[in-house]
Length: 155
Image (cartoon, rainbow, N blue to C red; front, side, top):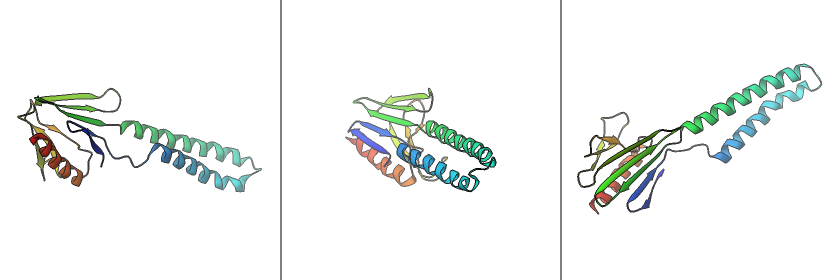
């Protein structure tokens, strides 16, 4: 699951990553090799250099797009359960930073089965405003996290 209780009072959440850094290198390298394969039939011709330039541009554009997608997908949510206060910190791409605090005794996790932007929408109620938690998780993961949060708040 893309979340982990690092201590009984601290929860860290992050989105799924289908392409790990090593997979990124293998994908770009494999794509470059497959794109260069048709150039074998053009060896010795002037057209090979023209095609090589276009294939290089296509490969550079793909690499650039994947890097931007990778950097924009860096989201981390940290939930700390203090003795009297609960804090949720959300960090995102660039300088994105949001912090939410509330009295722990008034906070309750709420699972909205159909209301919300995603099914099984998980929020925390009880502070100055209602905040979402783990929007990037799957439905089953949000349901499991809801049960774990309720148990952690009862402790």
